[in-house]
Amino acid sequence: MQAYNLDTAGQVEYAVLKSSGGDSLISTTDEFQDTPASQRTFQKILRLDPLLPGSYFLRLTVRDQMRNQKVAQQAPFTIR
View (spheres, rainbow, N blue to C red):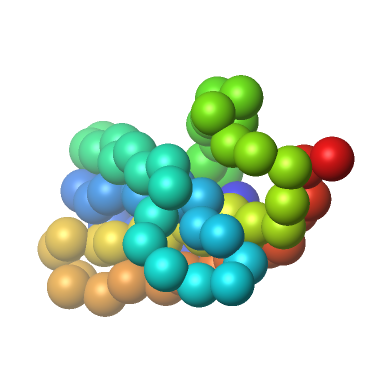
């Protein structure tokens, strides 16, 4: 995921949800803190082996702590 115009501190949350809804099955949060950037790229390796075959969503939420703003994106995926 790429995020634009972030300030110096924030968090990115990676969450895997069942496509039928409900709570996060896998969730982890990373913090970032450095100089302001016009663009940041976030990447994370998530272990999916605990998941059964089925349809899921990966949701990424980026929070800019200095501006008190957040943006989220999600993408579907299937484990067969």
